[in-house]
Image 1: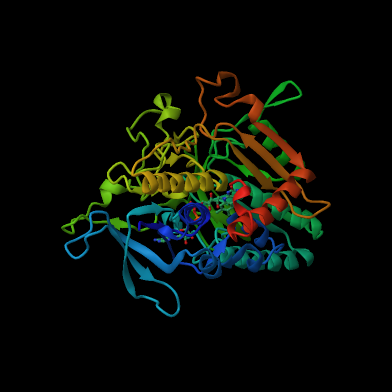
Image 2: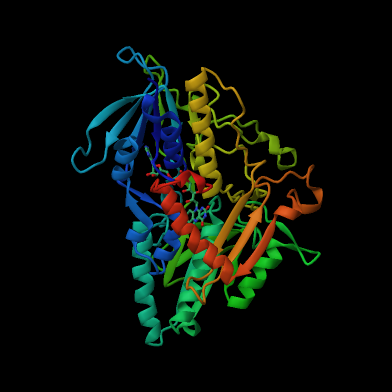
Length: 486
Ligand SMILES: Cc1cc2nc3c(=O)[nH]c(=O)nc-3n(C[C@H](O)[C@H](O)[C@H](O)COP(=O)(O)OP(=O)(O)OC[C@H]3O[C@@H](n4cnc5c(N)ncnc54)[C@H](O)[C@@H]3O)c2cc1C
């Protein structure tokens, strides 16, 4: 009987665990180690953050799902990996610190034959002084953060109803942040809510981002063909900002957030600040705090992980200039090069480089949006890693390619710009591939013009709302869940 352990019960890990169970049935053991008792559909945290959904609507308990599916559930935090075992353990294992109320703080060693690291990001608020809910700014990264942010927004709206003028700053809390799409969504959901509540006139809404231009979204922007004319995502996004009266501060690295001020440096090296009454700024991501040790107990963390804490996989990590980057650098199987029974999927794997062109200010500050690894590719990677493992368990080797390169994968992103069944709106974008290939698609800036599209309107909002229910249905592993694509 093979033991497959999945670290992280989020988008990619939970997907991997469900497919593993479906393909392996009861013949083998599938275990999920994850610190929270609940699963969270993170994209809908945006709606929690404007008070349009509750935390209950975007989360559910994992234990009953895993019990029904015969998946072993360990509520805990993986802290150390021993890929060669130790003198006490013949098999590889992971050290886990329990987080449930009943077992809090207890330690356990969880043995594996195959390991999937799907631990997502560490929300690195500490990278910027004063950033984050424990300091001076708000977040929507977790359902709890989003609910707290909604309370602050509500308070602000009451004050605006009394005629007070307020400045709301939404965006990226560091020059190397990712998830610009999420900050864009939250900006326009807030703007929509202010209008709906009749206080828009009293608000200055500012989007502050590390993107060099609007519409970059950490993927270097897109080119769409609309009515036979080429439109860039920069032009397309700019028109939304103009229409909704939202100001933008571009190419910014936030240096510090004080009680009421964001201090930042921009690409030209200038330093400025903006006073705020409400600031929702996303943190940069890094890998979670996992260490690795060899059979003798020597630290081999550097063998498994990059300095940013993300896990090394089958990518080409050779240091190259932007002009030398190739779509071939991107990983396909997500297998660790040193230990081929370890995979890293979703945000947990280390990308070979950015997708947007990284820039440096005259003061030497790097301003470089990190590549997004959104829900759809994360789910696909989870499924593909599960398929590889099942193939190896069943056949003792890989019998066919199980690959999911972001350079050969499309993504659909629907960015909500305000909720409501009649007045809601969203920007729907599809891109193929996610990582541009300028040799293959020179006319479309590295992407296929037929499969790279942008559309905005009520229909896109309905699609976004429908996806919320479909993905929660899938994650609950309800009948025929596997027919819903990632
Ligand atoms: C505000 C926001 C809005 C977003 N909106 C969208 C959107 O509209 N569309 C979209 O496609 N994507 C969106 N994303 C991105 C999407 O959430 C991610 O792509 C996705 O969650 C990545 O999946 P993952 O499995 O890598 O990480 P996660 O889903 O974050 O899962 C990681 C899991 O690992 C667990 N974990 C952490 N440390 C450990 C440890 N040491 N041991 C064990 N487990 C651990 C975590 O608790 C978590 O359960 C958004 C992200 C944010 C922050």
